[in-house]
Length: 408
Image (cartoon, rainbow, N blue to C red; front, side, top):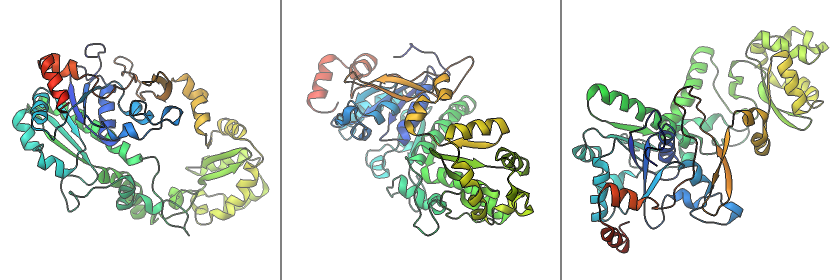
């Protein structure tokens, strides 16, 4: 794979020991930019995402996981038991020649196996180590394990989601796992730039809860401090209406749409799109900032009008009147959305069983140095011979012994 694609990060070697989403997503983003990402996986089971699916034809198979295919395209895979002494020796060989090491291992494993930053730096002072964890490497919770749902709770993200008379709910679809990976990739690239100036690598500590607080805090602090709005659960309406109304999800004739007006001019165009109904002449309904205090009244007028129109009709009106109403697409509709089709927002990759699946394309558009589009994800240990045998110069009989003793 090396040398086939020249991108912004071509020539950068990344070792990834990542499980599930956060660290692997970081590695995927670096691979998108051209870095050579060598994914280290336990030889018995590999990355846990291999077992999560979704699977082709709903048949569990560690080599045919859709989640793994998305998160690990364009990477090299080596199998290695770092719990074994010989395995750790080989791991140090990889580290010694790498530019970056990405991990989301438990703190206990890091300490027990001697993979702390000072230990890794002793092997390679130029190494950039990016650690992604739920609570970070410092603080009272640094030794705790956690999952995305715990992040949503601790960060306050869940507090404003749901209906006011019901319990809070979490942000769906592992959102902050991906956000942590994105933050880790950006920080790693910045550290690579910094290395040119300071002449050495450094340790990057990414806490998923910090990322979530950063996202939630921007909204909640600004609105509470500046406008006196405390974000609370408001169901299908945006918490606190984010300062104006409408700002909510509504039913229409064949599904749902989201609608908002960020200022008075937009709201008046919204009223024009509805045909300037008589109720809109009431001064009570002409100020989108005032309306946020009695949104139920406005909803009683908006919903009947929207129920007379399909999603496509609403979209046409939104474009005509330059207002912010957007259909809520189903997943199937997203895959066939003309806008995404024209931008080639999805690409097909082939699973090990020969089946194709659609995954999101790289979302960056560079005019001169395009990113590498997703390719097939590697099989577990697919590149053992290339990395161990050719690059690290272990002989073929050594590889056979290492495999027999379950080191690789």
